[in-house]
Length: 238
Image (cartoon, rainbow, N blue to C red; front, side, top):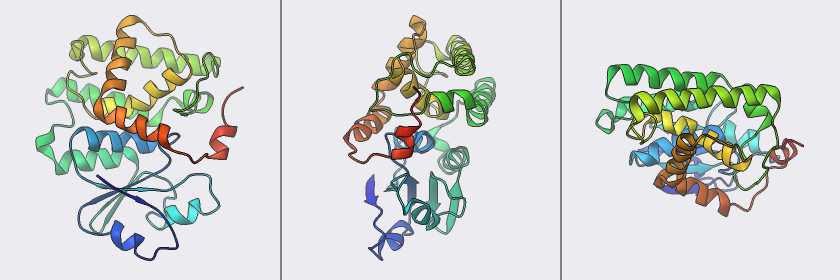
């Protein structure tokens, strides 16, 4: 994977991003949970792409993202002349383009459940996102535990328990690593940052996730970032 740091003073940046192949536009790895999902999925399955990182909460952030997508948010996948925004749409596109990678479970029942829990993650858990924002560098045990966030934690634990019991067999949510695990990777980050106590089987799942090469690489690169997104730090719960 090649990385391009977005510098608006360089006229060739966009030309590089639009060259043949896949380009994934993401935000800061320390904060951008939505960027983490397709990045981890593509990396885990060995799908080559060029990375473009747009720094969040900067005066030129909106203009820089607008270079790639009018939706105004990251992540964005550039595939030739196509622009695909939204993390789930990106992962679905990759799964279609690389069917031999088996990014979704091959079993019909497992695949249906995987898509259901990914859709729930994609559209739900607003209280958790608000009260326990992703900040991989931070350590905030016990913080952000609103009643609503605690309810979201309980529901996520139910999901993990069901998937692991039915299909995980002490591995990932559906045995082999899948898009479902990539979608819950930012939750694993949040649980670590905020010191969420989990049942042993669920903590073991989080430990396996943290040890997965794609997740570990994202975390390593997040910890190496020197930029600070002020608004994201301001959003940290008291």
